[in-house]
Amino acid sequence: MNENSIRNFRSIFKSRILSVSEWSGPSMVIKRNANMKQSKIKLNVNTRLRWKRRGSTKIMQTERQKKRRLKRNSNMKQSKIKLNVNTRRIKSNANMTQRKTKLNVSTRLQKERRNKRQKKRRIKSNANMKQKNSNMTQRKTKLNAAVEEKKRNEAIAEIKAKREAELEALKLNNEANVKKAQLQNESEAKRLENERLMKQAEQEHQKRLVEIEKEKLNGIIAAGTATREQIMKQEELVRAAEENAMKEAERINKEHRQEMKAIDDKLAQENKESQQRLETRLQEMKKEAKSDKELMGRNREEQIRQHRELEEQIRKRYDSEMKALNESMENRKIKREEMSVELKEEIDKEKKSIEERYKRELDALETQKEREAESYNGVMLQLNTESKQLETNHEEKMKELKGDLKEAKQERNQLLDDRLMMIKHQTGTITEISSLVGQRDKNKDFNDIIKKNSKMLTETCELSSEFRDKISLAIPRENSVPDRKKNKNAEFAQKELKKHLTVASKEVKENLPQIRDIKIQETDQKEKAIVWLGKMLSIYNDFSSKVNDFERNGPQNSQIDTLKELENMGLDLQLDMPKTSNIYDEISDRAFEKAQASIAGPTTNSNLPIDSENSTNPNLPIKND
Image (cartoon, rainbow, N blue to C red; front, top):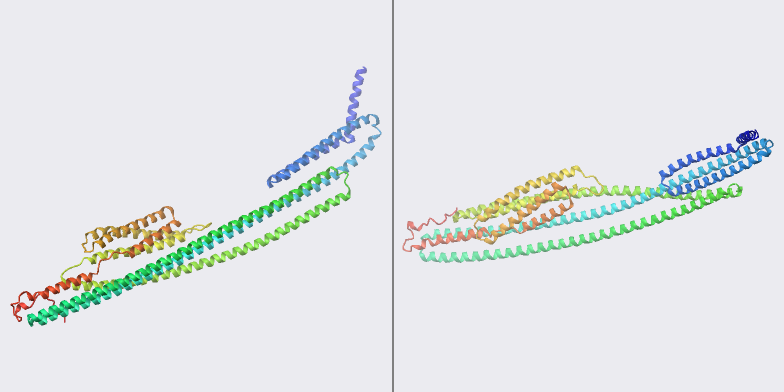
């Protein structure tokens, strides 16, 4: 019975103690602490998500340290509460009734005050942390924006330098092409003028010879009734006149050839000097462009290095200040219960001063950003205006060049027409003389074939120059979309050149056996013509390979260079055209032989009388009234 009563008493006592403890306050404190922990855990989860999004690893480390400290403090508080509960339970066994009212009132008031203070402090700390995080994000965004703007400015400067270098190179190339075209046109005009003068001199010489022959023949016909002695004297006079005329013609031809050689040498020397000047100027421009690129690269590296140093300094200073603040805050949190009003004011002042200083720095960065943005906008406007102006200038120059080319083509066509008219006139005179002689010459066919092929070569060079210009326009610039219209123009020029190349190569292949079959006295010129046509065929094949490369790979800079080289090869080949000797010399020699034969005819029979019917020689030419 005693043991059962003791057990019942103990159970009742324990239940009463538990009810008193729940009523008195420690259980309520534990529940509140648990609720506070849950709210802290929720806040910590939210802050973790925010920090993960923002990528602030250092702040996460500090927050983990804070959480660990809070856990330690909470554990310490729980252990203290447990000790207090145990002590209170032990004391409540003695003085339970006396302390019921006191404990209820005092503990509740103290706990409410403590909870209010803790809530206020937590709210303040959370607000401060949010402000710091927002300030950090703003600073990072501003720094990133400043870095991007600097990179953009550097890229703009590089693009501007590249465009200037490209424009200068294009200007030099255009100037060189214009000068080269001018020199070629001048040389062609001089050559045509010299040929015209030479042909005029030859025509005059031939006219003189024909007149002399006619006079001689007419004199012979008139002197048919004269004696044999008079005929012999007339023959001697005719021979002397013929010899003098031949000597004079040879002298004129030699002088004219010497003058032509001197003019050709002078033109070749001028062309070489102009090419050397252009090459030296291009090398100088390339060296200047390389030095400018190196300077731009160095300046860019220095700017990047300075910017990185500034960023590192700002970050280090910010990290050190944040560490100092965190340490001070942690130390002050530990001693929060013992802090005085003066320390709080000092902390607030320090915070305000730090915030003001960072605000000033941020304002300075914002002003700097605005200035850089204004300068960037100004530079972009200037670049746009300059690019538009350069494009307009380029278009005007291209129009002028096209007009000059058209005028040069018209002049060249006119010169060719004049030359063809002269050739027709000359061929007419040749046919007249050849009808007297009774022979036909094959040099005409040889020269016609070579002239036809040279004309085809000039047309191919013109079409290739147009195709080259279209390729240069169709090539897209850096960071730009290719233009379909320019590509279509280039494709059209490529098709035209391809058609012409097929016709020209077919013509060359047909003319090679014709040249081999033609029989002329100048075998060296015939061999030269065969080699010349072979070189022309190889040039046409190179042109067709580049045209096929354009079809496969599209427009490229290498195609422009090779087409230019092939055009120069074609022009050099035109300057080295094979030519036969003067047709009029051969015809005049044959005419003289015929005249001599006709003159020698009456002297064969000395016994015939002068007034006889045999005195009329059918081989003698009739006098043209």
